[in-house]
Length: 115
Image (cartoon, rainbow, N blue to C red; front, side, top):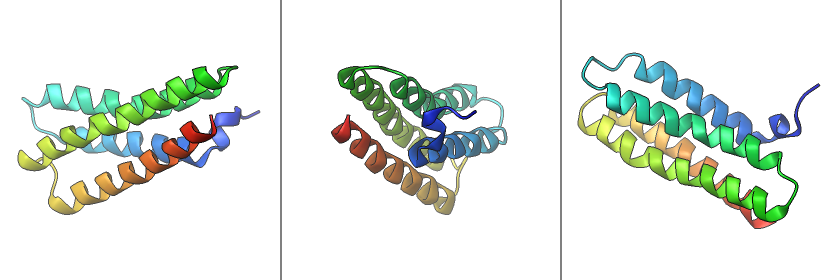
C-alpha cells in the first residue's frame, strides 16, 4: 500500500532530484565534503518535508512543512552555484538541475496555495 504523498508528482520529482544529487556529489573530489553534505541534506529535505507535511491533519501544519520544503529548494540554489563556480558541475548540468528546482518550487507553491 502506498502512502498518499507517494502519488504526488512533486514528491516523485523531489525524490528523483535528491537521488540525482546524491549520485553527482559522489563524484566530487576530496575537500568538498562540506558541500556534499549540505547539498545532499537540502535536496533530501525537499521530499522529506513534502512527506511530513502530507501526514499532518491541519492546513496550517501542511502549509508549514510545504514551506520548509520550498525553503530547501531555495537552499539548493546557492549550493549548486558554488558547485558550478568550483567546476564540480558543468554549465549544462547546473542549468538542468536549476530548472528542475524551479519546477519543484512552482509545484510546491501550488501545494501551499491549496493547503
